[in-house]
Image 1: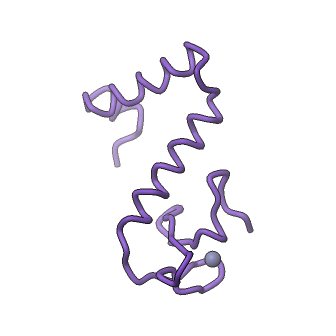
Image 2 (image 1 turned 90 degrees about the horizontal axis):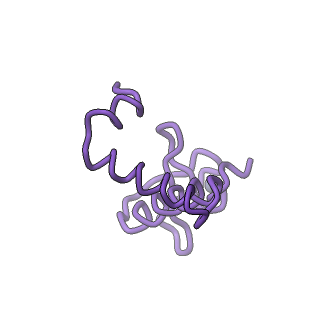
Length: 90
Ligand SMILES: [Zn+2]
């Protein structure tokens, strides 16, 4: 698997995305932590829009239940109660 640094060097779209995020930090618009949280939230929002039946690795809830959505962490699915933008809650 290509490292993120290699992808930065070879993928123009990814390069632009990273440079934009760096510029937001350097222009003091957002802290590095806020950029990290925004990226995690973007992943959560896009995952929430792709409804599939899944079970949470943390609590075994059916993630398609009302009010729950999933996020994939290290290849495993977790519900919105087990994962926050800051990471796994347990
Ligand atoms: Zn859960």
